Each structure stands twice: as C-alpha cells, then as structure tokens.
Image (cartoon, one colour):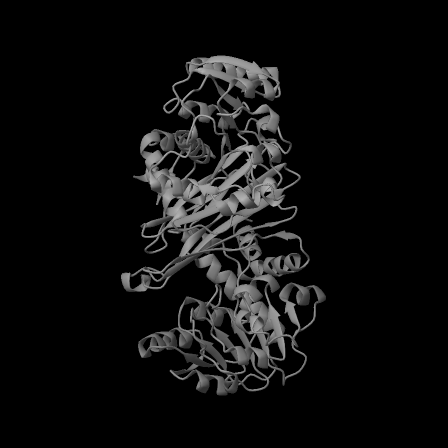
Length: 311
Length: 311
C-alpha cells in the first residue's frame, strides 16, 4: 500500500490535468454514472470542529475513493491547520487498500478551488472591475490563485472579520499580482465587484440581496453542511440563474438549501455543472444577469483528484 | 500517525476488555449519546463485491472512528480474503488522523462475534442440550469460540450447504472442545438446540416457524443489508421477545425488517440491547420463551473496538 505525505502529493499535483478530470467527473455525475452515497457528517461542538466523510466510484474505474475531511476552527490557535483529513484509494476489483494520501485537507481545498475556477469559467461576466473575496483563509487564497487564469482583472476587494487577517491576506494577494482593498463591510465589497467568492463557514448571512448589483457572479463554497449560510435567502432568490454541483446536496444542505426549503426558488431552474459542461456552452447569457454557483463538494471530485495524483 | 498491521492488531486484542467497551457503547447508543451517520454502501457488480463505510463518535471521547469494510466474494479464488478494509481513528479535538488499523476485516468480525456473546448472555435459557450454528464461515467460528465463556454446553449441531465445509467446521469445533453433529437439514438442527446462531448471507429463510421449540434463543447476524434473511417472517413473529442492536437499522434492513414491514410485529416490543444492559437485568424471563436477537452491526461497535485496540 502506497502512503503519500502532503509534500509528495503536492509534488504530483497538476492543476490543469486535474481540472480536466474534474470536468469529466462533474459530467459523469450528472449522467448518473457515479455511485456517491449521502455524505456522513459528524459534529464536535466542544472542539468547534466538524467532519464529513465522502465516498465515490465512477462506474468502470479500477478504484474507488473514501475521504475523511475535517474542519477544526480552533486549530490555528494551536499552530495547526483548521483543515484536516486524508483520502484513500481502494481497488474496485478486490477491495484492497491501495493508497493513503495524507493530504491534511489540501486535496479538498485544491479540488474545491478548481471547481470554483470551472464555475467562474461558466458564469463570470465579461466586464469585471474587481474580484471580491469573502473570507481570508486557505480557500480564499486558493480560489484567488486559480481564478487568475480565467479572469484577467487584478483589482481585488477582500472582506474579513479581523484587520490582522486582512493585512495578511493583502500581502498574499499583492504577491499574486493584485491591487488589494480590504474591508470589514461586505456590502462595500459587493458594490465594487462583479465576481464574488464566499469562502467562510458562516452560519449567518454575510451578503444581503440589496448588496448585489446586476451583472454579478457569486460562487458560494462555504456551505457544506446544514445550517451554514453566507448569503441571505432573498439574495439567492434574486439570482437570475443558479448553478449547482449537485441538485441533491445543494437542496439538502448547500448555500441554497434554506431558500429552497422556504419555497423561494420555485420559479428558478436549478442546473448542475455537469449538465452545462456536457453541453459545452457558457451558463451566463448576458452581462446583466446575476448568477450564483453553489458548490457543496462532491465525492466524485475526490475520486478524480486522487486519480490525478496517482496517475 | 500509528499504522497497525493485522498481526499487531490481533496481538493487542483483549476480548474481555473489549466486551466491556462494547457494552458501554450499546448503552450510550440507546441513550442517544452516539453520533452514527447512516451507513454508506457502494456496489461493484462486475467484481461481485460491495463496500460499506461506517463512522461513529461517542460524545465526550477524544477520538472518532471511520471504517471502510469490503466484501469481495470472488477474492478467495485469487487467494485473497473476501473480507477487506481498514479502520481509522481521528482526534475529536483537532481532526488529525491518529491511527490506521489495517485489520483486513478482522475487527468487524470480532466485534460482531462479541456482540453475539453479549446477546447470548442476555437471552440464553438455563437448559441447553446443544448449541446450533447455521453456517460454516468465519462468523460461525468466531461466534462459537466466544460463546464458550457464557454457555457451558459443549454439544454442537452445525448446518451448512456442503459436506466439505461441514467436515472442516467439525475439525475446528472439535479442537475447541465440542462434540459435533453436522447436518444439511436446518430443521433437524433446530430440534436439538436451545441456542442457535445464524451467520450466513442468505437471501432465503433457512429456518421456519415450525422448526423452533419453546425455550430457544436465536441470534441472527447474517442480515446486514436489504434483502438478506435467514429466518422466515412467521418465525420472527413467533418469538416472545425480540432484542435489537438498533431499532433504526434492524427495522430498515435487519433480520426482522421484512416481518416488521409486513406488520407482523405490531404486538411485539422491540428492545435495544443498550436499554437492557442499562437496566442490568436478563432479557429472558423464563425457560419457555422464544427469544430472538437481531444484530446488524453498529458504528459504535467499531468506535469501541478501536478504542480497545489503541488503549
């Protein structure tokens, strides 16, 4: 059995090759060629942590993947990453364990950021005065890094809860070639930005319907469990077009789940990324629409990124 | 991170200490102190294999457990065990992986057999002329081994589908100190036995209501997924008292599920092992009752056996 350390995994990581695998995975998922049981969730209230367990199998593959992915939000105070976990590959022919990837959550972070890049490719408007990033953590950084290859704009607004975190993020983003504005006021960010990525584990809406201008695209990646929300239900209902990684997951516990369950989305078409990719067209139809992409994270993304690392 | 091989795991296995942990686990489960998300199932039709993923957390513990457990039924022809898989422990404080137990399915087999011993302690009648084992596989052997410490009787009847398997089982059981009768006729076994353990993956009933005498206890461990059944629904309805590891799992896909869903158990009380253990009393009330224990296997058992191995 192969055991790969985080560094060995990162050495094998090829963002473009894996992006192609992820696109194939989204398409296969939307074509019902993927076994992906419902996500298991565990909560650790006292430790301010949670864990999700995802598994997936693409029909015909010689391996399947199981992932354990934790978020322990008090870890940074102890000098540990808040993202934790590992991925495993097993033979689909004999069930034997083949590889353990001790990625410390990096592969989840990377495949999420690459899914964000795919969503931006499908949804971003032509005119972008500034990119907005809600949150200052690892997801915020990775999304920004991978957006660079699909969005030419280098004006950036960043929202965070602490000046210290914002200043650290400013240094990171300036090194990535951005002109950076920081704010503690998310509405101010939204006034300037046409592409907004929300990356926090918030349980209260950070952006309201009134904050968002026509011609904006929002990718929401923070909501991956019941109760997590970064956008108000009214903002979600205001979107002209809504893109989902998974109808089943997003309506159950994604960013749109609350609005969906409140009956605010009955007039909306909820479209899966895999369906749009299979058609080979852009999701956005004009530069006035408000588009929203809800990314809850799919087991098939884990299957595909592990495939890319072990290739 | 600790990585334990199967041999290292077996060296650390203490059946009595782990039985106490399992009892604590059943009690905690019935008292709603356990997080145990629904089991994930994957199917590999071409390989004649399946895989289930279980996770669990006992409130207040410093670790949680994830198990990947495969059954690949064509493996023996390649010289591989049909049971595959591993268990993992993670910190419930930081999410970090702590240990990977490469047990190749042994811990699942062992905790199942120990649960059978607990059920026998609670249900077996005083007068036992013979023990009956339905099936000749690993579960049959482990159940018999652990029954020895709670049932003094050393007369044994074994049912199997092949004379070869029965003869192999006879040798095993004689080495364990039993006087062994083999049969291809399950009804004949039932006529002689007051404690019967059913351990097969059968999808057709092997025992019928008419086969069972008053004063018999049956532990059914084979049914761990929809469609698996070793006892006829009428036999289940004939039981005076029914013990379950989990009301939710047993009524959904356990041995009793078909009888339950057919409405045959409306007059029965379905009692969880944890509730009986918490009261500290025997489940059986007299030597004339027919008792049945339905064991589907719980994630909390995995939590507790890993705790015992890592202690």
